[in-house]
Amino acid sequence: MYIDYKHRIFGLDVVRALAIILVLISHSTLLLFPNSSNFILTIIQFFGAIGVDLFFVLSGYLIGWIILKQIAAEKTRPLDFVYFWIRRWFRTLPNYVLILFLNIGVFYALYDVIIDDISHYFIFVQNFSSAHPDFFTEAWSLSIEEYAYIVVPLLLLLLLSVFKKTDRIKLFLWVTGSLILLVTCFRFNNHSGNSTYILYHDYEWSKEIRKVVIYRLDSIYYGFFAAFLAFKYNRIWQRFKILALCIGILLFFGIHGVIFSNRLRPEDGLLFFDVFYLPLVSICLLLLFPVFSGWKEGEFLKRTITSISILSYALYLVNYSLILLTIQHFINVEAQSTIIKSLILLAYWVASFFFSYLLYKYFEKPMMNLRDSKFVKHYFVK
Image (cartoon, rainbow, N blue to C red; front, side, top):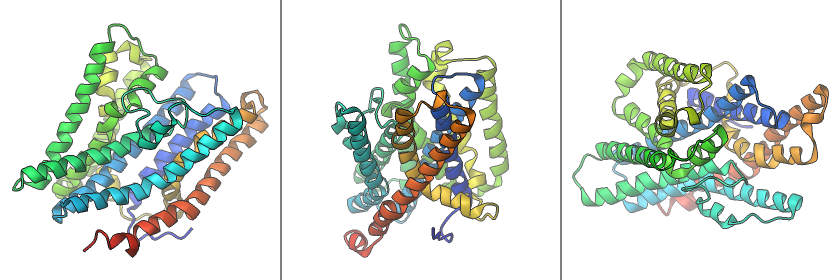
């Protein structure tokens, strides 16, 4: 795979590669031990969830930075924001739609069933305000990202048309902060309405809160907030990067040390888990970014880490619903010997990387090339 290192930030590639590896390791436990539950498996699966949160904060940081650069360059016409969305959609939608169709086809071939309300997946409303269906479950996070990247630019566009002389960078901060507050209020309102009669267990809490668009948009916007700090106060961002790293690590392991040592679950503290826990995770993660965003070059496993980072989106889309669930459909992995399990696990990882490479090389990369071509640019770049 040819890699152009010139415009890449190695530290952010490390974050992206780490995030997808955590997700794959977590999914590996679901393949090998689907009906088992113990402390070690819980920890591994927990870090898989943290991998998705890493994706959220990283993606928010990168997209927030792009929006801030666009604002600073005074590219705030409606056409400029449309071009932002077009570039974003070229990056996400082609892969998503292709994999969605493949999931529909595989599910029909295996079970002779068409999923109810399948049209919801095409406009990302399948988990907008309620639990995500048990089909193509990876799509829950993509819905959150798509709405996050529509709402802020749209609000900026509307507000800039009214407050023409306002500080646009500060307006970005106010919009981001207001949306974080609004989403927090949504979670609190949900908590107030449900806490008297619902006791969530981990699985239900994850489906009903963690994977619902209106309760998780702020996870992207904490990345926006990190981008604002790096953009507006870069000297401070870099000066205190080690302190921020230490605080983020200590806060993360402090919170989860208390949770895991006391075996706390959502039903043990609904207010904390419903309203405060997920934002605290995002804040812990964004405190790592001053170090990683400033890590421009790397030598250790540079090619491998960067390659995994490049394939991460394709890996995320293909590894679970298409590969893992298909393996589980044909093989009762849990009943196999240790050697056979090991071979199946190896096959899962090899297949995930192989098909993600094909997806990237023959579909994702051509779409990205089309996005950056003169054919598309001439409509927007003057």
